[in-house]
Image (cartoon, rainbow, N blue to C red; front, side):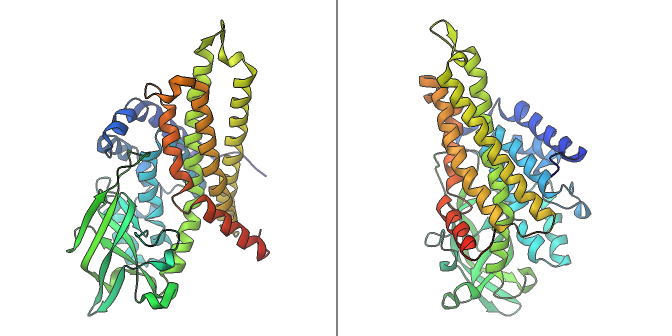
Length: 382
């Protein structure tokens, strides 16, 4: 086993950490209060190229490998989980179906549009009646001359209101179940596409989360990704790709709260001593350190397996399930380190705790990950 990173991975990781500390930490609290997507921060991120870590070099991107993408993701989440979620949803989640199922022409069109001035993308899967049950989706794609007509509403879509292109899943016929699902590239400017309700969220308030409405939207056949009925497999492969990145987001969120708590424990004096000298506080910090490190190794293992061409679906779900729960526990414990001050907005740990909750919900809940892990175990898969 080799735990060393390449020079490129270290460089990108350090760049992301510096950006988080200098450009994100000073202002994210203000954006959290306003509950708006931070366009100015994202523009600065675009100048570094970190907003397009999922774009291959041959299409004008940085060409960062899978582990490098995860390392950057962790560092951005250490700065703010909401902004990092928007970046991951655009350059990785919404873009993974392109890597998986697109032909060369589709890749050229998608990546060209993505690189136009730091544009965002969104992954349109979840519906009001189809969350964990993806096969129960109601958005339809009816065949017509030269393409399809899309009708339906997607909800809880990250970047839904700020993206300029979408990867959209719809069904030819709900009676077909998962065999009827197709995946499409859809331009935001297409007639009939609109943004519905923007969600008022507990956490990740820098991330734009909204409904996307498709009302008789014509999509050319040339924008269908893969053959008819293969959308389900594209979706499942996409989630396998994305779950190590969600685990990296969780590790970054937990690490951010941990770093703030360690520094605070050295400065906060009670009974004439820094609270870092008390065993109760030391044990909370030690437990958090061990839990974060375990999560980091889990997502890095999943990345290694993918990069080496080995099956990684099980490791992806293990990493996502563990790290989501870990981030919720660690951030809650770090609020405890701050005591009463941790419960106020004067310090950042309450925000990390609010943000962390989503990590147990999106990209497959912690319960869904356990279902996947158990199913793989019973099939004899490791």
